[in-house]
Length: 387
Image 1 (cartoon, rainbow, N blue to C red):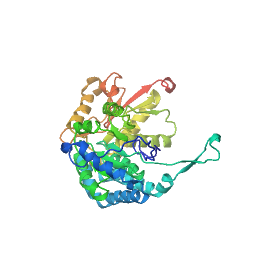
Image 2 (cartoon, rainbow, N blue to C red):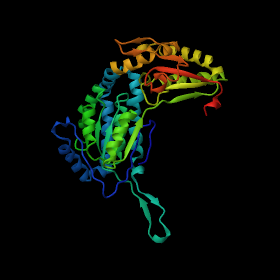
Image 3 (tube, one colour):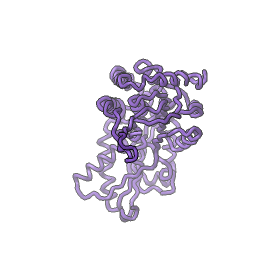
Image 4 (cartoon, helix red, strand yellow):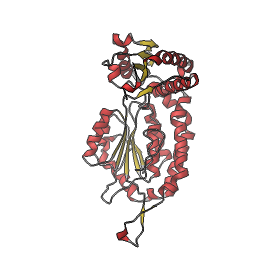
């Protein structure tokens, strides 16, 4: 696969398959009728060979663009229902990014799909060699709940551009967006080549009992391990985009201008995407002790400026995740480390952007991925001690 994209899970596929690869299928319905029976439809669609035609690929990408433009208001409503996202955030992180990506793919599709000359060994002289990009077959996409539109349709666009057929399993934790995808994808894309299946973890388990030519999963490490284990049974290649505790290292804050630029970027990287509920969000900061007071004051003032209108910030996904984040702050040792924020509202599922200074390293907030608007700052004597 040739990897491209501005986000970790933004993958453009120009895939290579062997003669032994078996294409599978997908489904738009709930799996009550049997996944195996419905898979045959996609197997037939891919086997017909029409998905390899560049005209078909362009038509699917243009269909995606029509979907994103004609259904813009419905998309904004769905993302607000699921996550409380403001229109500006939805456009910046999902809708607008998708439009830009699909246009980029359309612009480069013919070049990406063209055979490339390859060096042939001397023993084969006078033969010449080409590397010919071929689709793998059937791609299964498990999308996530925090970017439920972008991380569903971005890999779909790449798979279709490469001539594959696709099954999308949206996250059940973003039900409005999942319902939107199920209702609209068959209207704008080839319904025999792109399927949407709704359901919870049990549906995912059923899907992974079947053989796929490629599986893409965005989510937690625990579920990623299950996906990889199931895929190993069929030797299915898997792309996992997982979360972790991502630190931000602040090595110096000498220049007044540079320090504000750095803090603006930290605030944006922590709180602007789904209220910190993103795998690429900063989990905690490492900074030298002498710079900590400056950093904290700048963060406080910047957060107040960025969150002057609280309704512009996304909500916590659901009560379960809200309680998980609240439990971090319920630890007395952690609560004493709060230097800014800390307010929670269970009724609205919102948590104020919160800054903590040196919470205990053995506390849950420092041993688990935070995935929310809480930002610990850990100080060190010298930065080279942690390198």
